[in-house]
Image (cartoon, rainbow, N blue to C red; front, top):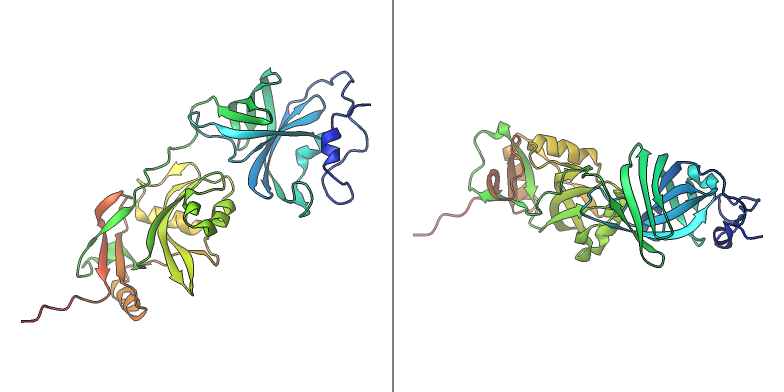
Length: 328
């Protein structure tokens, strides 16, 4: 008797994985049961991060692996790879699949809910999702074999990503007199870099591959970090000091204080990345510390300033040491 879960069973050993492996088959030639309307999306940290979209259909869960997650903008389609049907028990599954087993890695429940079917064929599936995090009309369409695409049919749900041009400080020889209106940070003298993160990936990893784990740690959260790659303790480290975009919301129009609070809330602290320290109002002590540590200078950032791509007088670079007067 043919079993709708034959492919699923063939890839798993019930004695080695905590995944549900039902004892009873789901007959492929039996009359299809009344279709339910449940769906689940699981965040799957396997060999590569992806999200598994599963839709209840004919007594099983029709499944797609979506490497970048569901698109938030109808202008961008995302790859969706058709995988084997999964058992209904997978609607609530989460846990650790042992390394070396098929799909080995951590699986968490990203969203659950119900859906409506507008169209279902062998090459096109059109649904309306009703979940806490995923909602709206989507269409999945086959492009080549197991490769499908998923397209959002509703208007965008997020702010567009900001232009990826850094804010640049003006150079001055003296610290600002109204120090209480500024935050003071070290000027690190490293490589300035903007790090856009989407779908657990970042283009910045092309130049700095060690940033891939940072991007993956964000999961489905979209962000744009501003900072510098500096050498600390003999290795490259990303020092982050601004946040331009966070979880679907552009922050470039927000004041420095709001962006800084959002950055600190990310708790970026690891061997290869960290949040740069910042000291509101502490002009002279920060400059002295920069001088003692051999850093090129300090940055004074107005507390009320938005993020302005390109040169801006709202940020001021002051060298650690005053320039020597010319000799007669």
